[in-house]
Image (cartoon, rainbow, N blue to C red; front, side, top):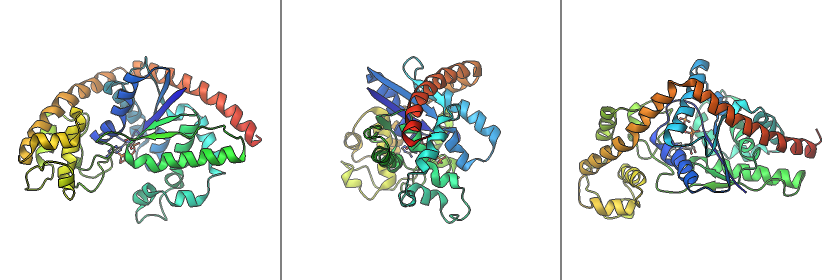
Length: 332
Ligand code: AQP
């Protein structure tokens, strides 16, 4: 049976990169899914690695549940739950911590980027994050993990951990989960700098599009987005060294379900102000209704609790069955 699992950290309002790189892929997968178990987690334990305010985290977890629903994840077709409502995530993470070589974690590029110069002072949780992520995935024996490109290395680590567990304790116990990284939007870049990823933690609000931005803000952010003075070329290959230009083409392609080269062809020879106008229109059509739905769900915390409880009950049930076997295998 195919089992899909993924999640987003509740560290704030999600941006277009989170939506196009991850959540939209989940929703598209649901449409096509038959005989498939779909689990979408709000990974609040991962948010603790960069915690600033615990009241905010509680609020952001609800906001993420509202966002999942507003983006089209139907609770009839999938289970939505908070990671911290399933204690087995941390239990399994400890077991995995005891079989994961430090050398594997030392290679994780996201840790190096996030720790930067503060390598001595960042918390152990940030370093161990990929082990918890391996537990998130393997706890449910997930087979497919749809994520943005930045998470590829972490899913690969989960495969390595699964292999290590199988070799040491129980042959063929875990399937090796597949990262699912598809489409033109697996890495949406900052609107201010086409060489760095669009991110919730970027200090500049103008670097990203939020799902809750209003019409004026969306238009302003796209108008201010960095581009160059050249016209749009006939293909992406001809814009190899123009990261900001490629980024806007990729965004428009992803939102209109076209190939980036088809977008280039349609706008060939035109200036970026023409493409930006089209992009603003598409963003208005796509995001404004979602923003309204997020607000609507945020006024109904009772319903959000109901969805999260139902999701957690299913997740705990599945996790409990697997943990019994895992504990037996390791001798506890
Ligand atoms: N720029 C992006 N383009 C495509 N996909 C992206 N994702 C994140 N940024 C982009 C994908 O979104 C999912 C959830 O990510 P996350 O919030 O759990 O963690 P992150 O990758 O660290 O995202 P941010 O926005 O950069 O958050 P902060 O600033 O809090 O660290 C993942 O599938 C990710 O690949």
